[in-house]
Length: 393
Image (cartoon, rainbow, N blue to C red; front, side, top):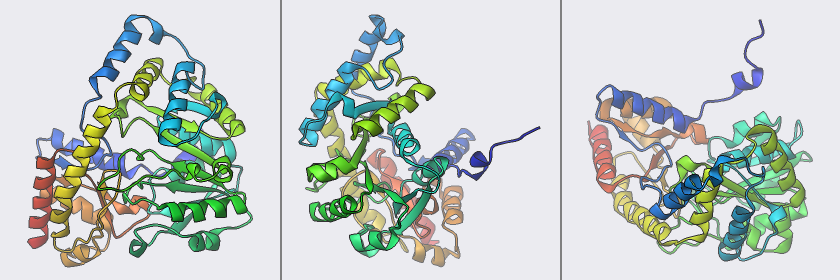
């Protein structure tokens, strides 16, 4: 009997989900676990969004299939969102919605990649990019964003990696896991390079509303018409609106690519869950004060916890500008404790202190760990205290 497909055997497990699962398993055993694994806001979805969803359910509107690419009202809301936060107008034919930004990424790669097409992925990178590229039979090409350059790549770095097979550049700013943001000048140089060489830009902008201490998110697609034509924007409601469980993502860009992504959605999930679409309409068009309240809370946590983490022996950390992750380099810490493997090091921290972190190995950064500060300040302070005690033993 034929067993599992090779593509599944080759696929790596998500290190973030694996770390979270291990933390939950230990907690279920009665262990005192502080989980800083998932990129998930700890706030409930704003009440006005919940109410819009309940109204859709009670009125019967949420009971039926929708068009694969999304409700017209939701597309209209995304049009307004793009005008407000990106500064340009798009047509409804340039918009498609999906079950989370993650599935939008998947339908993009499946729509544009042929076997052997190369996708440049700057490292450190979000864990699912490379596996999704490989599922689409493409080839991920990793380019190191050096810590000395705030984990960012330059045009010179990209040009060294470019070949005749290069088709896509993945650009995630603010970044998961580093929280770093590309400047306008850096983005303009990268965008013009992509236009010159006819390389598609996949702009993962999911953390664009979550920037801190005066930092500014600049969408690469807003810099020129030529760059915009080359760019597919991926965004969603999980992070800024605290709607991770609703699974709402959207993509904006070239009509032919967007149409192909919608076609794939039609043959896989049929459509984004209807009730989530009605919730998304309210999120995008309703009051935005809750977004700012949560942003301010994350900023407060970052400013409080960053200096404490920087004092942990063996940990060196750059202060992020956005998202909600700290990404300390623990090379010295591992040496102090006798470890050479960062995954084994994070496992030891979990077992001995109850603090669940995510190994940097899954992000292409074998000397780092990721810590989410999307949880309450008391938990964060206790976690850093335990890390400090662990390193001083």
